[in-house]
Length: 281
Length: 249
Image 1 (cartoon, rainbow over the protein chains, first blue to last red):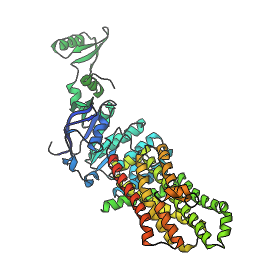
Image 2: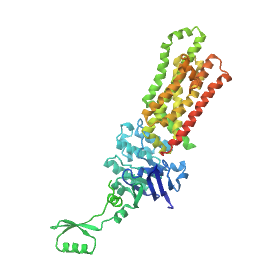
Image 3: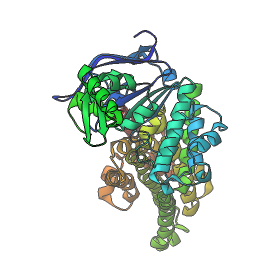
């Protein structure tokens, strides 16, 4: 795991008698956007809590910014940004005042606040009190607050939860920009389309255990179905195996002028998840 | 160190501004002042007698000053500090701060300092309304500050222990009552018996000794020991609960 900015090695955690995380192992190189996927209750938020020292592990090793998490200093945590599932800003302060407060707290210039407001589509609402904001505006403001100090490593727990499609697209665009700047992102989501859109690599978590971990495209190829869907003029639509017999059949259909279309039926990440876990979201 | 001071400055600024926008703060300021004004009507006759009787004057001044001290500390701590921390917990802003690398200790220190400053401002306002000579003001403010320390520490503990603002109301009431006991010591023998051992009992006793002109090191020893004991109790309780708060499990 040399060179990893963040890694877990055989990490487990139990609450009383219930094992909630089981032997988690992964490592994330600098600059990668890593998706941690799974249904509600799979252990995604618990993993983030371990990685951000809100919880203590029972067993295994966690490395944060190249050193054991137990030895991570306050200065190390200044290099980290966290948007948790419960992140909240101050009700009686405006969005801009909240961001200025977090900028001061982090020791960075207020000059970055207008940029973040613009990137989050909040410029026109900058003076709106948080208590008067919609859920989506609050989520975008909280995300902006987690980015105010330009962290090297960013933990995002369901960052687009509650956002409308336009706001989600804006957040995805911002995540792309962060990746381009070399920021490492640890992202939890139960939205497979989001993971496919923004992640370089994903781990699929089920009942506290990682059941698959790879590049999304590799995962889709690994679990690709060995068949194509054929649509014909008179014989309807049916599946054909990707083998010699299937090739002969397609050849015959083409020669007979029967073939209308051939579609490769590749799984998306959600289907990969179903394949590896047997569960539905 | 510089980072800690920077964070403390940001938190102090935020807490002070928030206090001015917080409706409970208005109540915390108005209630003690209103009570002191009300005393002028309740004690109309003793006040008239006090003008010609120095012994009654000492008694009445002691009653007014003890009330001003107890109401300022009790109201401000129970209504702003405990509720303030509970609100941060209920709305998850405390956890968000901690995730931004701010310690619970820094949050508590900022809230404690703002609470102390607010208590002194409310105390000064109440003092002005008592009608007691300004010569007593420095001692009154110093004793208010000293007495506020253990109550603020207990307030921090109760604030951290509160799950939400409703629980804060539940936890705040006993500390408010505990703070108000010395107010009744001059007029109720039952209260006098226990008042000396309450968090503000020590400083109220020092105030009384000062007004009577009998403040000696020997006389001050017990009240100071009581105050120090409450400070120790508050500090230990805060340290224990702060550690529990730092991690979810």
